[in-house]
Length: 285
Image 1 (spheres, rainbow, N blue to C red):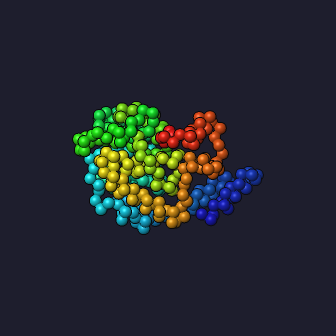
Image 2 (tube, helix red, strand yellow):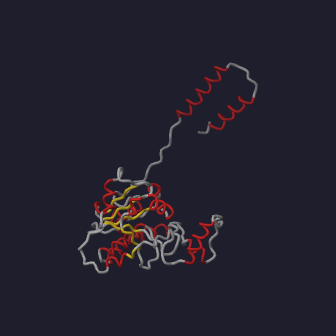
Image 3 (cartoon, rainbow, N blue to C red):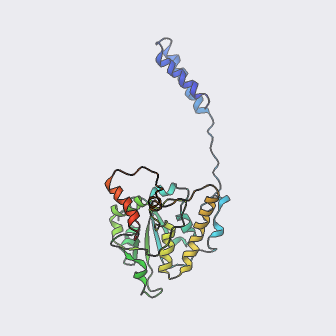
C-alpha cells in the first residue's frame, strides 16, 4: 500500500493541470494503477483459537472456573439479546450458557419480537409460569413471589433482557410481548462483581449476575449463585491483572464528585442522573 500516496498525488496534479495529452492513455494508466492495487496481497490476521465451551481465547480459557457438569435446574432462561451485545469482547452471557444445560439457556438476538417471527418466544410470554426480570413500579419482588411456594411445584420460565440499560429499556417498551409475563425484580442487596464495565448504579447487575440471583431464588439453592459468579470473578480478575481499570458506577462517580464528562442539557437525562444519586431502591430505567 506504499504506492497509494504517490498515486493519489498524480491524480491530483492531472486534475489541476491543463488538459493536454491523450485521454485514452490517461484512462489506461488509471486502469493499470487500479489493477496494481487490486493485485496487492491482503493481510489476513490469524484469529486466536477459541474454547468451544466458554467462547474465550484458549490462552485465557475460563473453563477451570466453570462447573464440571452443567447445573441441573428446573427453571428455563430466555435471554433476549440486543444485537450490539454480540460484538462485545467481554460478555457474560456465554459464561452463563456454559454453566447451564443447553435447553435451559436460550439466547434470542434481536430488537423487535412478534408473534409471527418468534412464535416460540410468544408462546413462552403467554405461559402463566413465565416471569420477566425487569425492575419498575409494576414489578413484584421475586423472593416474595416464591416465598410460600413448595420446592418443585412450579417450573418457571424467566426472560432476561441483555443489553445496556438504555437498550434494555427500549426493547422492553417497544415489544408488547414482554408486557404479558409477570414482571419481577430482585431485592437482594448485591453489589455488581462486573467491575470492568460501567453500571448506572451500585445495585445494577450484569445479565449473568441477574440470572445467578434469580436461579438461586427460584431453585431455592444459594450454591447456584456462587457457582455462576465464579467465572465472572475470574474474568474480571484476569482483566484487571492485564491493565483493565475498575469501572465505578455512574452513581458512585456522581456522589463522589468524580464524574468528568459534560453534564447533559436534556432535562429528562438530568433528572435521570439526579435519580442515580437519590433513589437507591431500584436500578434506574
